Image: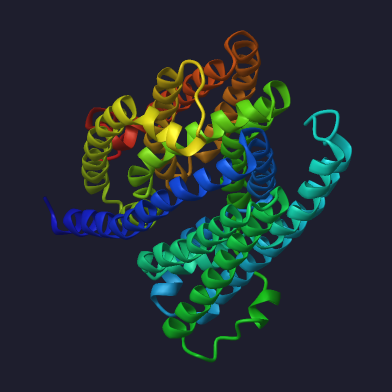
Length: 442
C-alpha cells in the first residue's frame, strides 16, 4: 500500500474515531432522553413532539443550501495556501447561503403550516400553534460555513465536542421535564435550545479556526458583501442541495405522511424504531464527513488507483459493521425499543430488522454519492433519485394501507435498494478495475 493511500485511510479512520466516540455518547444519552419524554408525555403526545420536530427538520433540510460542500469543493486549495483574496469571497458566499436559506425556511414553513397544517397534516389548532413558534429554530439550523471550516482544518474532534454540548443541553432539559412532569411545550422549548446551542458553539469554533489559520485581520464581516466570481459555483451548490433535499424528503417526509394517515402513536413507533436502527448504523455513517476532502485530493492528483484501493477497504469495513449491526438488532433491538417506549406493538422484530437494513443501505449509498459528487456526476443521480422518490411514496401509501407500520418499513428498504443499485452502477468506472480500464480511468 502506498504512503498516500495509508495517510488517507489514517485520516479517514482517525477523523471517524472522533465522530464515533461522540455519537456513542450521544446515542446513550438519546436512549435516556427519549425514554424520559415518552414516559412523561405518553406515547400519543410524544408522537406529536416527534411530528413537530420532524417537520422542523424537514423544512430546514429542504431549504438548506449545502454550503459546506461548496466551501470544500472550491475553497480547499486557497485555504491551504492561506490565500485570503481567493478564499474569503467563497466563505462570504457560503455565509450568505446559510442566512438566506434559513430565512426562506422560516417563512416557507409558516406558510405550509397555515395552508396545509389542518387538511394535509391533520394537525389541530394547538399543534399548529406549537409548530409555528418552533419554526424560529430553522433560522439558525444552518451552520454550513463553520462546518466547512472545521472539515478544512481537519478538526473533526471539535465537531464531536460541539455535538456533545448540544446533546448535554437536550439531555439535561428532558431530565428536568421528566422530574417536573412537564408539558409538551416545555420539551419543544428544550429541543429549540439544543439547536441554538449547537449553532452558537459551531459558529464560534469556525470563527476561531479561521482567525488562527488566516490571521486576525481577515475582514470576516466584510466578506459577506464580496462576490465569489467563480463560474459554476451557484449551479454546484444547487445540485448538491437538491440531492440533500430529496434525501430529506425520503427520511422525514415519510414520517409526516405516516403521522397524517396512521396517527401520532404509530409515528412514535416508526420514528423511535428508525432512531434505534440509525443509531446502530451511525458509527459507519460517521466515516462519511471525512471522505469528501480525501476524494477531492485523489481527484485533483488524478490518483485513481489509490481512490479504488481506499474505496474497497472502506467497503470491507462497512460490510463487517453491517453484519454486527444486524446481529445486535436481531437479539437486542426489541429490548431497547421496550426500554425507550415503555410499550409493545405487533411485528416488533420484523420492523426493527427492516429499518436496520434500510439504515445500512443508506450507509453504503453515502460514500458512493460522495464519490459521484466529487467526479461531477451528481446531475444524473438527481434525475433517478427523484423518480425513485415518487415511486417510494406510491409504494408507501399502498403498503401502509395494508400492513401499517410494517409496510412503511418495507417501503423504506425498497427505496434504499433502488438508490444503492443506481449509485453502484454509476460509480463502477472509478471503483472497479475492469470498468476503469474500459473508460480509461487508470
